[in-house]
Image (cartoon, rainbow, N blue to C red):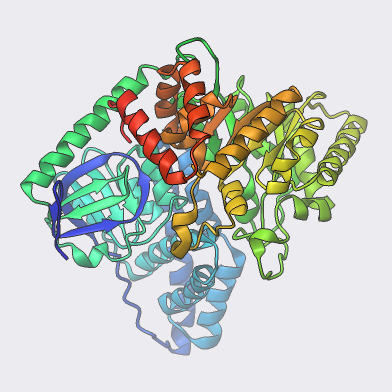
Length: 590
């Protein structure tokens, strides 16, 4: 469907998930899903051993190929990113998959490729049927390994990316990790995919390589033709197919502005986060995966304000051991040192369902058995994590954050569990930070109303706006039909935040914010004016938020906060702040 308005004219305008920021303008290179043609072949008894041998050799060739590929990734984007292939190596060494395939060849007389395809398809379907994005994203690992082994069985290897002679935007149905590492930045200006989310490996790789990308577009592969002109807007998550010359000129100006802004923002990377009149504000970054630790520092964040530990549980079939967790936490703590790392204890449940223990189906999983409620019931799991975090505190500056707290009894139970873990380590002579600070995420209305009481028990509070907005406004943030009601600039939310900050300060503890609201430039002046002590935002958002803070007088921000607290409707707040921010920061991108 053709799109036409004052600034945009193109054949198709698609909206997806902004996976990596920036703007790319080029022609389309269609990367076809590598087709695997499998004949359901049944072989003679005399050929069974040959098929088994063919399969085993293909697995060994795949392992060798992966090692070579991994070395290339280390040189290209670093050791941490290369670790995404650890999962592939593990799949190739998985005794269940290997034995199932060989059994299928021997007992069912299936050809090697047919047997392996069938086994891998079974596991892929299981992951795709999962309700969590995390497991759906991991199915791309299975597809990648499946294609690699079958290519070697069939003796047919193709590398479409080698056919790419000049620069282009890659459009594909799904970009596997193997495809992603083959991207050469000088040739690939951006990419757009039908599948994938912000936590897919491809999206993480794209951010590491700083290639503009939009994922989850659902139907772009079928809408474009090879050589079509295309615009990728990784800031807004938009893709324009066959734009006219005027539209391209419009996006070239946005592109120039984006690069110019980034150059200017880079100049303040190592400067202190101070307002014009000298008020110091902590600006740290949220961390989801260990491979994002490098970007925390490179974007100028002062430590990690929220380290989500959930992926450690979600990527394993068994519960992670204390030693596994300790090694992972210590690695990040040492990388971020001397700045602090605030480690949130696991926040499983809701849409994050681990394989290692059963979370039964619940009518309202986000209001049910999740986060600290699981930790306090499964004390074995909780103690293991607390011991690992305490041990990691011996390597640097660590603080502990408890999620989903709804009352004082839970705070007391958390402190008791922590003291028990400390006592055990002391008896064992294991080093840890004796004065480790603890905090609570204020994300439940009852905790917000009890913030003064909770503050007496802890060292700091962190406002988790993603859930606080959801619970306070009674809006399911995953429900598209009522998405318009999910507004963090709602007057009720602003009043609640102000109350939490005041309650914390009255008890002498600092108050931070780790939700998405902290990354929203429309909120920054309000939060400064409300005396928020710390912003923890996504690494990419750090330079922009720092620029706003460094360009602001605290006294002016306080006046703005006082004014917006008098508004009755979220639309009034948003209209007012849009006007203020555009006037004050017209050279920034919003």
